[in-house]
Every structure is written in C-alpha cells, then in structure tokens.
Image 1: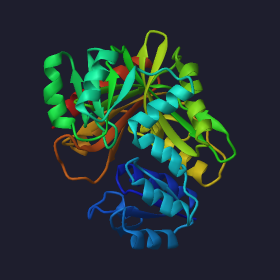
Image 2: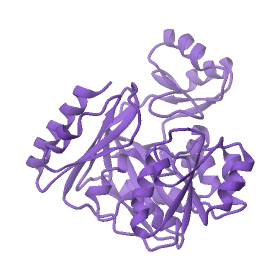
Image 3: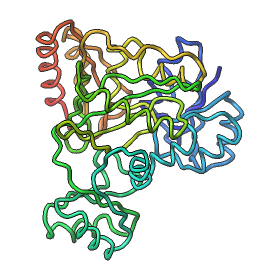
Length: 363
C-alpha cells in the first residue's frame, strides 16, 4: 500500500519510519526543497495550492493523511474527492481555527476558558470588558509553538498587542493560572475502536515543548480520555488526535486539538507497546489498533536550535536519540531523545543528565 502524506516534516519522517516495517510505501507533498521526510519516499515538491501537483500526488497513492494542521482546507478537500483521506477534512477545519475549536468543545460540554471572537479593535475593547484581565489575544489560524499570541497583563499591553496582531481574525481568551499542561494522545480506528495513551505532562519554554512525561496513576486520566473520545466521535475521526489541556485542581480546561500525531507523543516510540506513529497508520489503513500501554518508565526531551553530539546523548544509559536531518536554527526543533528506565529514581537521574545536555546546546 502506498500512503500519501501532506507535509514532509519530522512527523512525516517518523510516520514513514513506523510504516516501512508494515510494508507501506510513502509519497510526500511539500513545497520545501529540503523537507526532512523526503529521503524516506517520493517527494512531490509543490505548493499545497497547486492542483496539478495534487492530482499527480493522488495518482501515486492509495490513501492519504497529513502531518500538520495548516494544510489548506481546499487542498485536503481536493485529495478527499479522489482518494480516502483520514482524518476527514472537517477535522482539519476544526483544528485550524481556534474559534471553531472552542465552539466545538463548548457544544460537547467540555470546559474551556472564557473566550470571544475579535475581528476589530471595538470587539477587542468589548471582549476585555467581558473576559477581563489578564487575558491572551491569539490569532485564530496559523499559530503554533507560542507564535501568534500575546498575554495582556494590564491595559498598557493592549495597544502593542493590537499593533502586532490586529488586522486578522483573532480570539481573546481569559488567562488560565494553570498548575500543569497535560495532553491526551488518542487514536480511533475506522470501526470506531478508541484507545488512549497515558496523559502526558508537558513543559514549555518560549512557547516550545521542551519536556514531555507520561504520567502513571494520573487522577485526571479518565476525564481526559472522556473529553478526547467526545471529540473523536463528534468528528467521526480516524487516526491519532492530540488534545491539550490546562489542569486546574481536579478540572481540565480544553486548550486546543491537533488532528495529527504530536510532539508530546514521541515518547511512545520506545515507551509504549505501539507508538503513536504506528497506531496512526494502523487506523488510517483499516488495521486493528495496537496497545497504548506504556512499557516501563520514560520521558522525552526536545533539542531546540542546536542538537548535542550523538555520542553525548547515547552515553546516557537508556537514552534513544532521534535526529530529524534539519539545519540548525534558533527555535527550530532539530530532534529529540527519549530516556527509559525501570524505576523512578533511575529515570530521574538519567532525565536530569538529558535535560542539562539539551539546555547546554539549545539556541
């Protein structure tokens, strides 16, 4: 079976690495000349808006999926009209627009921070009177890794934020003094079978994920799974979905979804019975899902800006290095490492070394 992937970044690369043992082949469509997934399959280098290239892409594949949520909806609909595409375009549409996301969550009785639509300065002023301060002003589209948002602590912050972000569709949300950021990685098969990985506690710096730790015996596990399943079923979703939450006491407030495999699930390659990448492929290809159970203890650390030398990472017992073949650049994710152990004390010691190494080389 030949699988088409819209996008050829590191997520596409890891999907292909998971798919080759299953006998799959891959075709990527991506405008980048040096897309890091391209060595792992055919690469149709073209804009997502190029219908001739999209038609060529469709002619080479049996079914399609995508590795990031900013594929133009029109491109996804073009492909879906010619080949099976999972998840369906309506899931992509929901994940592309923060207002659509929050509206979906509200309709499913999933708690969210207070929010209002903002298209004009007048709507921002009205929204501030409704939401109050502190608040977060965000672009509705194309924001990721902390981009496209501004925290408003006081009224003096409003003008600079509007000058930077105004003139496009925005959303204003109440600021959440959360205790933890958690994500739920869930997968749904074509036949409706749903499975969830352990909730993951995430730590960010400068809006970029730095550390992801699956939590054993997490008291919010059932709640996170319940919310994730509501979204999966409402969208008739097929594949892996990442659901990000703010944890406040015994509550989870929905932040956003990513209709794809996700950075906070990279630990599953070594840390789960079946990785998120293999399970996504199993789902979209109509195969039975694999177990989402953890194998021992693990945690994942991102390498951002610069990656440490391989010999320094692999010198840490239980560390598994994944480099993406990307050129160093400030704030760019160049790779990650997952560290595994059989007990908490050993994991903490290994993780401390890995985090220190990542911090020393980050840029």
